[in-house]
Length: 226
Ligand code: CDP
Ligand code: CDP
Image 1 (tube, protein in one colour):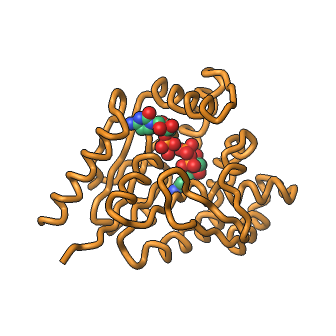
Image 2: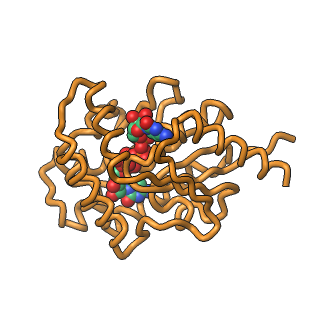
């Protein structure tokens, strides 16, 4: 039987997690769950409601009550719905970028979103990416990947991506945001960004998306043959 795997992909911002995870899910016919989009959606809701980023109780309530869904994956788009509204583009705004790590360090927010993430992965045949998937959300995953790349590479990738969308942001500005988020995500008390002991690390500096995807697809074949 063709076993439906659970694949966890973690790593810092701009390492190529979502691009790679999406492509792997498309090739294998799996679901793709972008957990960063879920933290971003709660952050957007908080900004829109004028809730302060240190109001733990209110943010936890938002996370618990938010309905976050992903439309079936298409090559060009992974549509994210927040309470029935398409927020795919809005969750990538600068204000969300600047506040998301503050929201993501709150215990109640993490608890609420991890619960939703585990439910989404229950049926198997899933690729999930984030910061704590291999360590906390899905410690029993069949395959765990930890993607990295140099800060310079990650910032350049992000800048190219923004340029493709018609936005011009200085490389230094992007580097600053990545550096701050890397620090906050790695230094936080709960579920910090960390490679799981049994994760396979891939440094994607100098690798194309195709290279990385092929490497991971080969690893899934090895796992299935075990
Ligand atoms: O796409 P990018 O790598 O810039 O970020 P993302 O994956 O969309 O995640 C946005 C933020 O959400 C991260 O910087 C973390 O603060 C938080 N996050 C998290 O804490 N845990 C996860 N599993 C996923 C994201
Ligand atoms: O999800 P994460 O923040 O880890 O990264 P991403 O959003 O998947 O990738 C950021 C950008 O880098 C995208 O525009 C990708 O096309 C690009 N990328 C790349 O050029 N080479 C790779 N090996 C992986 C991603």
